[in-house]
Length: 190
Image (cartoon, rainbow, N blue to C red; front, side):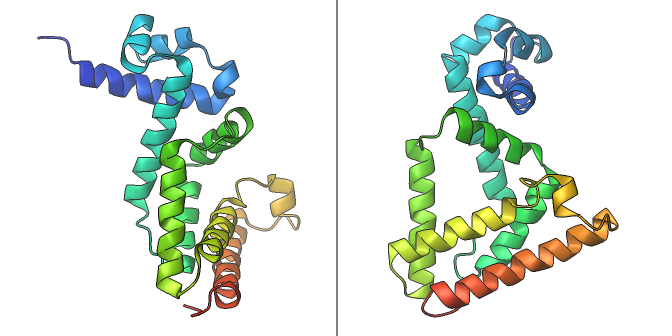
């Protein structure tokens, strides 16, 4: 049986995802990633070039998975936001990874910039708005979808209610907030 480079690459991405979620870019260790893959450390450099490039590859891979799980619906931002919210609840490590990215690599990559610009333009087109309004609506919807996981549990559930019931009410609040924002910010109010 020969060497399977695609399987090694996939194992490295998965091990790196866990490492970057736990430690961020600065705290992540190539040795731990290679050990947990299992692969040899040189494979990281051969496939990705550097730890920074590996971080970018992990982020890109996870965002592509998210895009496949949550289809973008520019004409229905509340539904899109609800689907994002559900995906984040199912994989909270994705929020943690993006928080590390915002702290350690705040500049947008060309891929990120293009993704956001194209989505914002699609929102603008769907609602007869300009790009700025489309971007504002998109950013607010993204922030709403992430708010639950970006808030400490004792703050997001101050009444110490049943966590599942509180989560359900928050999800409904997210949808209502994005509906209101869409009605107010975008001309067609779709």
